[in-house]
Length: 61
Image 1 (cartoon, rainbow, N blue to C red):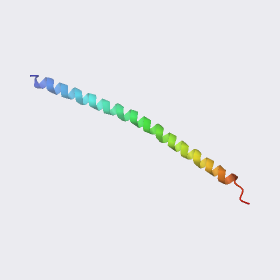
Image 2 (image 1 turned 135 degrees about the horizontal axis):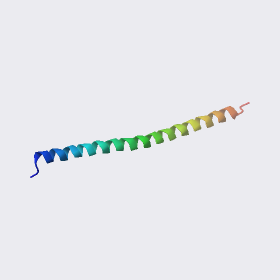
Image 3 (image 1 turned 180 degrees about the vertical axis):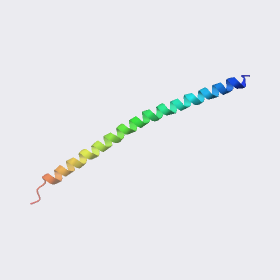
Image 4 (image 1 turned 60 degrees about the vertical axis):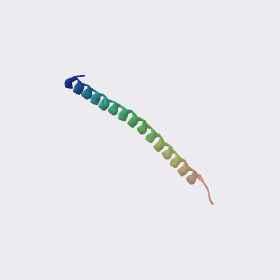
């Protein structure tokens, strides 16, 4: 049976690895979501510009 010291060392090691993994996962997912959000905003902006030019260029008279 492992000693209590070895048990707590193992437990602390697992906590450190878990925290580092959580930090890396949040960083990667945050970057991906930032890129997706930027792409969506650019598509919306391009659509609004296209709509503005279409309305401005139409002649109803």
